[in-house]
Amino acid sequence: MAIIAVLGRKGGIGKSTIVGNLAAEFAAMGRTVAVLDADPQHSLMAWASQGHGVLSRCVEKVKGSGDTLRAKARKAEEAVEIVLIDTPPGLPDVGYQASLIADLVILPCGPSPLDLMPLKVVLTQVLKARAERRSKRPRIRFVPSRLLMNSNLGRSLPASLKEMGKKVLPSIGQRVVAAECVSKGLTVFEFAPNSPSQAEFEALAKAVEKIIMR
Image 1 (cartoon, rainbow, N blue to C red):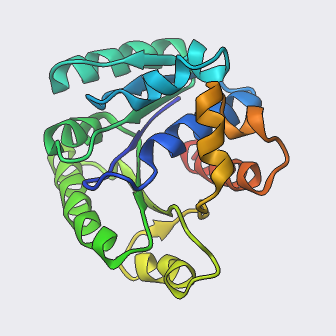
Image 2: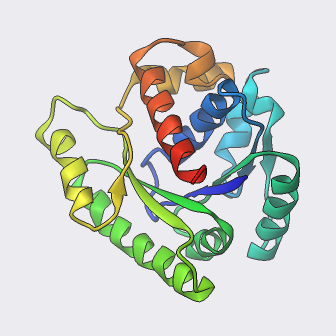
């Protein structure tokens, strides 16, 4: 049904956390999911290997070129409804190749002004891929990520992102539980259901589902 790539030029903005927890939320919604871990650090594979949760059954490591990523994504798309791609920071070619096949690109951004500058670079990259495709795809959405909502930077980030001309999806806060669940090999949905953190990922998944169902 859809390929979703999560991109970011800067590390530490929550890409892998978003991909892993979206996978669990989509599975809870009855969707079949595959996760492609295209980051050379393979954080999602390490996360999945810590336990026997949702991720242990749906994460696949991707090595090599953009052609390898494209082939694996297309193959996965034949088997499941939603393919999620986690891309590496600092390797723009992988992100560009993901943009060439994705139906939706999600761009997380942290609250620091230092997070906004590389976001503009990766947005330009995705727009270039869209131009190459001569298509309105991939759709592009921002996600305010790792927010402390009691800070001025956290509260103002969604508005700052909106000013960049793309729609903004529900925010993901900086919450300890999102890190704690990793050591168990579980997602927030499995580790802390009905928690504020899980509610945030559920809201994000529902917003994404509305986009890809259009």
